[in-house]
Image 1 (cartoon, rainbow over the protein chains, first blue to last red):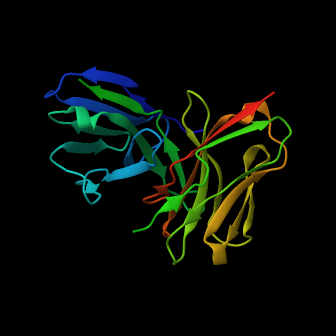
Image 2 (cartoon, each protein chain N blue to C red):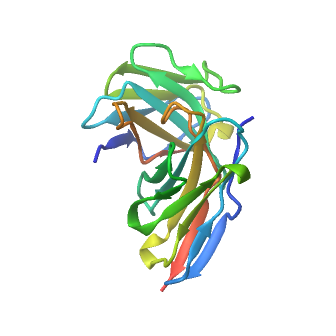
Length: 117
Length: 114
C-alpha cells in the first residue's frame, strides 16, 4: 500500500529553537496533507490542512505564525515549529490524501515526538 | 462543536473473548465514520469505514462496526480477539467529503492476553 514517511520520528530541542518536520508521500502524489497533534491520552487534533501550491488552512486556535506549513510539491509537506517552548512538546502526525473517484484514501505518517526542554 | 467520544480508554481481554468498543459522535448531519488501528510502533491504518448504504460494515481482520444513526453511534466489534489485536483503536468522523478534516476520538488501548 501507499506509504507516508515522516521524519524525524523523535526530536529533542532547546526552548527558543525551531524544528522542522517533514512528511513525504513515497509512491503517490498527495494534493492534500493534514497535520495533527496528539497529547498523551487525548485525541488527534487537526491543526491544519495543507494543499499543494497554496497556503495552509489552519484550525481555530492554531497559530499560523507558530506552526509554519509548506506544501511546495505533490510529495512533500513540512511543519516548522518556530521558537519552540515546552508547551509545544507533543506528538505530531501527518497524513496524506489520495483522491480518486470511488477510491479516496488517507495514509498516515508514523509521527514525530517533539520534546522541548 | 463536533466531537467524538470513545467510552473506554483501556480494555483488557483474554484471547477468544468478544470485543465491543464504543464510539459516539455529536454531529447531527450527514457523517462519514471510520475506525483506525495503530499497532505498537506502526502507523495508523484504516480498519473500516462507513459512507452510506448498509449500516453494518465489515472491515479487515474480522472487525465489523454498526452505524446506528438514532444513537449517533458507530461501535466496533470482533467476536473473538487474538493476541495480535493488541493495539490502540481510534474512531473518527467527518461531515461528508470523504477524508477531509477527520475528528478523532481519544482512542482505546486494547491489550489481549494469551
